[in-house]
Image 1 (cartoon, rainbow, N blue to C red):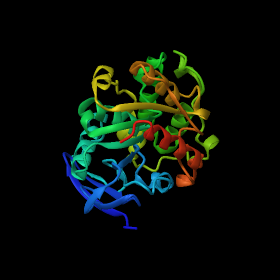
Image 2 (cartoon, helix red, strand yellow):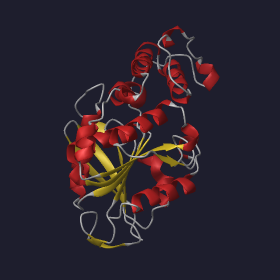
Image 3 (cartoon, rainbow, N blue to C red):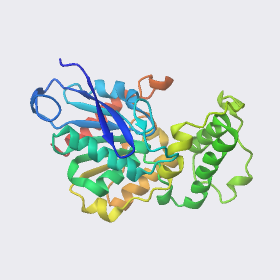
Image 4 (cartoon, helix red, strand yellow):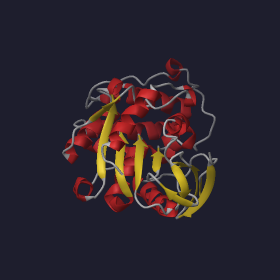
Length: 302
């Protein structure tokens, strides 16, 4: 089997690194290598999670060419524009360039969390580049009934990071993502969660380069999907949420996005990180998750 190849791509304001894993069904490859692939490539994307988070999931698709990448400002992909925050539209432009660089025509995409938001922006702009998108738990606050409260919470997480540092902000972020049910309008009156309750440091180390809390927090959660463009795109879009995530913000957003598209919500095994097999110390149900993802992709053919 051919080994994984890491490639470099210059985009507007960033230098991206991405990895191409040739599959066993790939003979001599076009675009992704040196001949003709029997199946179109599968692109796995997260945000701000980098390519290392997809190691387990990629291993379940060894029959296909799998492509992963580090989003701008994360891991091996450096920002060159000096900007402090990134919008999903910028990530979408990066993905357009990456897919075009593959030269293999439309790809299938599995997108997780902020990556799912970025993938929705990609399909709204260039649906011709994506055959099937499986968008898993896109955390966009614009579509949930408690929109104003959630946007306020997300803005507060970002402000806390800039003011107090990583630990206090991450505690608020974890409280945001794990909460079941709607946020009340008076959420700001609730006691701030203690970093110690999550095993996090309370002291501020002075760093402000975290891509989740700093770079992507506000842009990702405030993105409004363009449902008109998404419905008009040639892409088949499947929106999914984890079975264990029911009631949580990202899962509620996924259900609302599916409703906006007029499609059923796909329920996948496990939780928000259900595909993880120990990456970042987190475990989902990767084998069962991969099975569900393969079924969702195969239903669209390629």
